[in-house]
Length: 380
Length: 163
Ligand SMILES: Nc1nc2c(ncn2[C@@H]2O[C@H](COP(=O)(O)OP(=O)(O)O)[C@@H](O)[C@H]2O)c(=O)[nH]1
Ligand SMILES: [Mg+2]
Image (cartoon, rainbow over all chains, first blue to last red; front, side, top):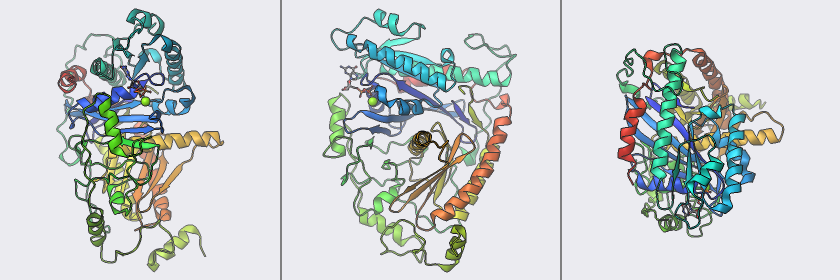
C-alpha cells in the first residue's frame, strides 16, 4: 500500500513484476537500472540462486523527484517465477500497489503464463485485494524472438480483463519504460483516489471517474519542515561516540567466500538517492554496515553474483553481455586505515587490539553493566 | 488491505523518533530503523549515515516475512523477535503492532540482553502510537496526493525514462 510520510515528505509505492520463470522480470529491472540517471535510482539488489535465478526477489528503488513537495519513491520488486517458489512469491506481493505481469510471448510458454496469472490472482485474493481495483499492466516480452505469438492471440488468452498491455523486448529495452511509466501513473492515480475516498467520500470522485471535483484542490503542501525533510538524523550526543566512516568508503571487492544467496549490482557511483546519505554498503543480510565490512580483516561481506567464480566483475560481464552498459567496479578501500580510524576514535577505553567478537557477557569487563546484565538474565 | 495505506504525520513521527532515540541511548545501540512490513522505511535514528537504509528496509522486511512463513511451517504464529549476529555488528528485530518492525543495530559496546530489554519496552510504546494512527481519520487538508499529482508525475517520468 502506498505509504505517505508527512514528516519526511515521501510517498512510497511498491510495484511488483510478476510472471512465470525466465519471462524477463529481472531483465526489466536491469534495464531500468542501467538507463535511468544514477541520482534517480538506488542500488539494485538480487537475491538469487547459484544459477542466477531469482530466489526471493530483486529490488530496485527509484525516486522520480519531488511532486507537490513530496518525494515520489517507487520500489520495484520482481518475484521468482518457478512454481515451487510460491511461498516467497506471495511474501513479495505483500502490500503491493501495482503489478506488471511479464508474459513470455513464445508459443510454448503459454501454459506457464496462464498458470502464473492464475497464481497471481490467487495470491492477491488471499491478501484481500480487489483484483479489479489493483493497477496492473501486462507486458508481452521477448518480441524480438522469432515465432512469437501475435499480440492478439496473447491478449485473447491472458488479457480477458482488457488491461493495458505492451509488447516488449527487455533485453533490448523496447517497451520497458513504457510499461514502467504506465504502471507508475496508474498507481499514482489510484493513490489519489484512495486518498480522496478516505477523506470525503461524498464529495469525491468515484473510482475510475475522470471528473474533477468542483472545489479547488486544497493547499496540499505545507512548507517543508526544515528539520525533518530528508535526514531525520540527530546526533545523540551523550552516547559513546560512534564514528562516522568517510562517506565514500567502498566495499572490498575481492570476495573470499561465496554466498550464493545474496548479491547486488554494483553501481558505478554510490547509487544514492537524492538527498540520501547512502553509500555503497554490501547488502548481504548480516552485513549491516560499512564499518563492519571495513574492519573485517578478510573482506567476506561482498557477495559475488551467484554462480560466479570470479566475484563481482564477473557479474559486470553478464550485465554487459545482455546489452547493458558495463559499470566500473569501485576500488576496495584500504581496510587497515579505515578500521584503525574507527577503532582509535571510538572512545578512550576502546580496545584497539581486541579481535572483533560477538557480544558476550564475559567480555564486558565493566562491573556496573555486569550487575545489570546479571539481573537481566536472572543470573544469581 | 489494499486501501490500508500507511499515512504518518509529523506529529507522530516526532513522538516515534524521540522514543527510538531514547531507546538508543538506554541500550547504547548504534542506530535503529522502523520498517513497514511491506519494506518501506518509516523512520530512522542514530548513526545511519553510512547505511543504505532503503535497501536495508526492503531486505529486513523480506527476512522478517520469510521468518514468519518459517514460523507458520513449524506451528508458531510468528517469531516476534529476530536476531542476526555478526562479527562486529548485530541486528535485533522485533515486531511493533501488527505491521511494523523495529530494527536495532548494535555492536559490542552493549549486549543483546540490553537491546532486547529496551526494544521490548519501546515496541510496546510504539505500538500504542500506531494504534492511534490507525484510528485517526485522514486529514484532507494535509493531503499530499492531490488531483494533479499523477499528471505532474507524468512529465517527470518522460524526462527520467528515456531510452
Ligand atoms: N530474446 C530475449 N531474451 C530475453 C528477453 N527478456 C529476457 N530475456 C532472457 O530470458 C532469460 C531470463 O530472463 P530473466 O530476466 O532472468 O527472467 P525472470 O525469471 O523473469 O527474472 C535471460 O537469459 C534473459 O536474457 C527478451 O526480451 N528477449
Ligand atoms: Mg528473475
